[in-house]
Length: 321
Ligand code: SF4
Image (cartoon, rainbow, N blue to C red; front, side, top):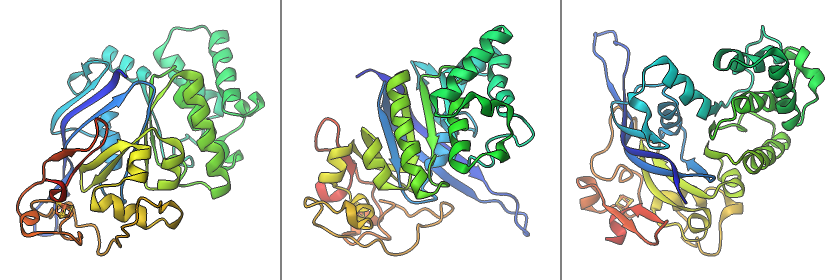
């Protein structure tokens, strides 16, 4: 399958605000990540809160500055584009769905105006054509076109997320980054939104980067999974490979924490202990060594290489070297 996006050696670093002594700290949010996203797939990024998943998403959307590396979308390095026209065409191809449907919609605008805005800014379509598109898209996400005259506060959380999804589809993007799109919703609504995303992927031939800490949702939705720990991808594979034959101790620990996901193959139960280390003071060597039950001396000072198990499945851990 052809790649839609290729991320090469990406680094995102933040400086904290000055503290009372005037000092700042460097936060290594994304550390040398390389990743391909194939056309038409749903690639999930999983990991605990604070592992850098959302920063990675924002870097791909150019919402945060990347320190180094490349992000190629259809072969074009989007980190180097700055002209208004190029940015416009980039944001037509790539859209984002945010976690919180309460804050992602402007409360002062009617739904119709929210949906029209990207078309008015980015196209020269006539009013009637714009109206036709927004009616089609709102119906496509399961809402009636009568809701175009209402304001966001008149909708439930699930309905607002449907509206946010409709807005993300307005410019016919190829690639959608969904950052925890169901985690703010009631469990009963989550399944409806997940099924909607699955259906839209088929109907519009979309590619998704799906960010979530919920492995049950990821198992149901994704084609491949990348497991992220402290700004690095520690294991990646097809969904089936990750769930039936997890290799990295961190992946095993994440799976062990969800009883209904404990498969026969994942016999090894690892309890994740301790907090995620602060990204300001990253451990040397393998970053998981402070929590890993199998840590050896070399894990504390050397970085493990990538070990390939199949063409699609690899992980970074000394246990397989
Ligand atoms: Fe654990 Fe060492 Fe493997 Fe890291 S490299 S996951 S510390 S065994």
